[in-house]
Image 1 (tube, rainbow, N blue to C red):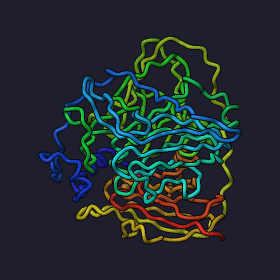
Image 2 (image 1 turned 45 degrees about the horizontal axis):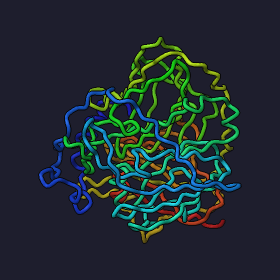
Image 3 (image 1 turned 120 degrees about the horizontal axis):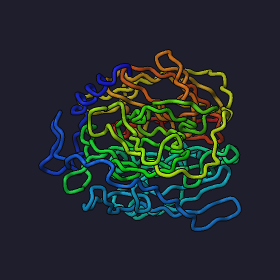
Image 4 (image 1 turned 90 degrees about the vertical axis):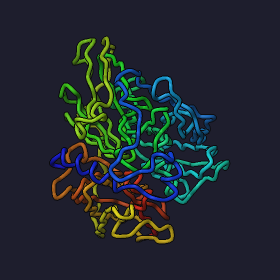
Length: 482
Ligand SMILES: [Cu+2]
């Protein structure tokens, strides 16, 4: 996006057109706040930033382990948390916390999660970025009924990476994720261990998302981008994070349904990006700016040893420099700490690109009149398989956003490489293994996708602005034996 102010204007201008009428939105709306195009509901006043410490999500402990497998229990349930001080906020969670607990997996060790759905709607947990068979992928039609229990099995046959799990129940995932159903899933491996990156308490998951809170502390939900003016980091509003004067690895996910970010440090200093959606970059990228669209992950290292004790640095969002989402969180630098970590000049070797034999095109648009999300003019239909892909094939997918609002594009199972955006090669931080590509208004992204996986069957692709997926901006394909 060349002109950020234009983007903001367009998003605000079209926000009112994105209302979905019917059961999903109306059911959760207070009777006095029916959405009217262009209006913002009565939300809580601005929250004073930097009043609350940033929590670090707990690591979930296995209930048992065997030779090659770790077993966990992680139920879906309603919980009460405190976002605005002194007020209760009811949320939907995995395991009772906002966000859910962190699962730390190892490449090559299987994780089995036993899950009971303790809310009164069907759910489907998708492990975003997992190389997994369709039965365990948590697709939109694969619902766990209220009260039912199932297991998800993840073989973790993939390199070290930052994944996240979230609900994917068709039509209701937008609301479920908005109300809290997501968490981190980190895969480690021997290559990563050998690099000596910041680890332990200095390897910190950071989930950043927007939210709309009513003045009584309850979550306000509709499909309007403009109804989510507050920022939560690991479940707390614009927190501070007390850091030692040393290096930290921050695993960032944009957990918002609709809001893209572009982060910078308030002092303008650089940091290093070491990873993207599906693993480490070939080499660290020194940068002062980090774009992150919904669902994307970025692994960064910030060296706070450059700063004197008492220094305060705000993580800012330059896409919306004048509103309540301009300040994300604050790093409060304390005393130095012993730091033997390092960021080597070589991090990982990316697999070679295959030779593409098929090109497909995808045009993303949201019908402002009906609220229907369309890919190539069609809304998601569970009874229609959009195309088949040969196992082992390499394909080029061209994705065009013909709207005046942002979209992005996620494919289940696979990682891919961004070839270019409007003919321009991706920035170095976007040139690694990806599973989401951001496609800003009017842009066309070209990606190269290899389908060299051991699994056959049905997978999904969709806009990861989750409300758009819920409105139908999604499709399905079958991987078939070649
Ligand atoms: Cu979209």
